[in-house]
Length: 207
Image (cartoon, rainbow, N blue to C red; front, side, top):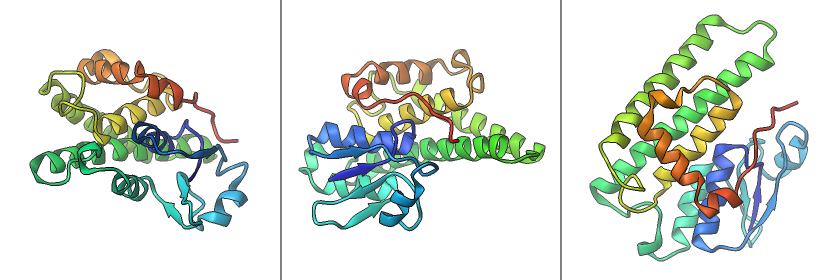
């Protein structure tokens, strides 16, 4: 398989981490949708990353769809998303909060850096949404002691840590770690894992 996209994207990074944790072999092509958009669009008409090219040449787009496919390639007991029940719903909720938080960060970055005159209303709305999601995630994490959110590593742990890293680097000063001690400790613990250190890239602003 071929994973396309740079690891400074929280979406690409979480797929790369899942691939490595699952022991699935893959090639990585760190194409940028800005400087190498034509290459990406030739495979994914949305011109978005991550894009995963399968062994048979078929393409899976969108990180959630890719992770769903990867989960199907390993035995149920190894999957990073519980198969059913309340725990699955809880993991999906945290994943959704994390990816939504990352989405708002990307929207905020584009508004601030790609528009000649950013909308003060939209900027404040994004910042408010980010702060509200962080507060919700902090409360959820503080209520669950241990190294991982649900006792073992899941897609929720990965999604939160990848989003935290991306937002912290794309928007320096936006997140005050002291305001979110449980989240900060969680993300620091995840970043200390060998797989997080391997599948890693400092944020590169689009040019």
